[in-house]
Length: 184
Image (cartoon, rainbow, N blue to C red; front, side, top):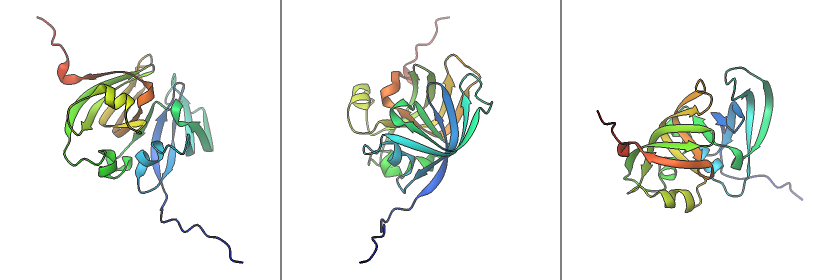
């Protein structure tokens, strides 16, 4: 009898990530396949995320290290944002863009209970809030050239080439080109 070997063609690699929850900031490495961070976070068969070499800080003091673990595990539904230093780390362009080759860039502001995010959302056509929030299987939406700020803690500011936002945590979205100009 021979031993069964995992002959999966998947290659795993670690990517640095900055993960924000309602109370903590975890900076560490997440293990991804060729589908990048989008693949692991939008995988409906996994409800948890493991962060390796995780350094934890409370949101109230985002630069003060509270603890350091080999591995921390968290439920994906409680993650607000995952920040990546490189756009390519989100995943292959076809996956990130939902398979569309031509997209429209929308400068956008997103708010959650904890954070404000400004950046660029790339969509294959017109902006449709209801479809983004309620349709499809992607729980995490990509935002590019993003800046995240904690609402009650303005010194917590994270800039990211590519950010994944949990759509179930979104309170509002506003297109920056629809901002009303103040009257003089």
